[in-house]
Length: 365
Image (tube, rainbow, N blue to C red; front, top):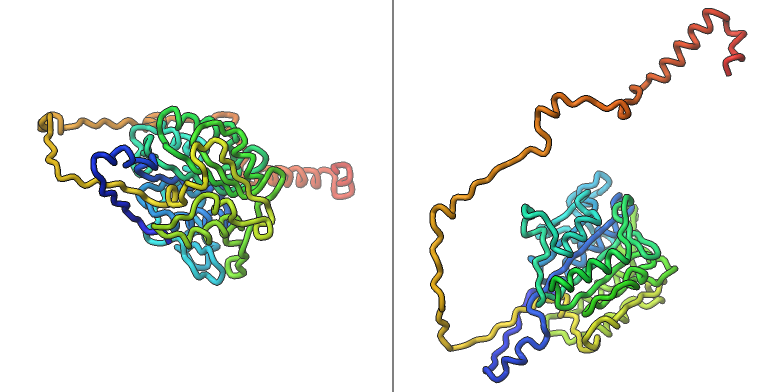
């Protein structure tokens, strides 16, 4: 497992130019499970297990479309397992789900990426990245050629995703971006990318299915997907000082293991993938320079006045109570009550029996 670590640079002024040679000072991650329902248990486990391999815990935006831990079919409530025989619970006490259930939509996902969120959105639900941020974006769910489904009700296309990444680049919201997707025909999702400094990996090529892994008889479903399982198995061996690079990551889960053919795209990335460390995206980097020089504040800090501290808040009902009380149902929304049709047919038959008897019943049907 990766642990949060700090890299300390001791340098003189002549080496200041090389101080930010890696071009990033912080790490962020957006991890998204787009599937609902119990039979998609593995997609939630995929996402939760990945949070265990990322050390920038406070810089993770976690989106889970369903709450498997509290599902009534779960034989062990408040747990989600990613290995057979329930060996590893990935739904620990430190898991913070930022978007859950019906909050996981295409709109909210795109708003998180582009930063176009309402002012009332808390910081924990925001991607507070900048032009020095290395961002990992992971998606898992059901998809097809050029799209990924969200909760079986909507989908995001590869064009929409590519445009969102371009907005991020134009708004200086990332330095380098690593995109990983585990879904059927996953490589189709990065075909339309055109923004710089972007690297992408997928679990399957166009026309291929991404298969599940590790069926569990006690739970009755598969626990993980094949590509994510072998990806995380690879990441578990990475330590803070590891020199493993992206070329090693590309070799994870060959076709003999995944059955599908994983793909990757590096033509938009400015650096050689062989020089990009795994810890550039899966580690938390803090660069520190120690100096003995005194730092003088050129401008004094203005004290906050009492009037500025008093902030007036006002609240507005989304729908006034008076409208709720006097609201009448629309005619098109009316439908017969339960049993109305059945009762109507029963009445017709009784009237017919009294008038004609059972011998004429054949004239009705």
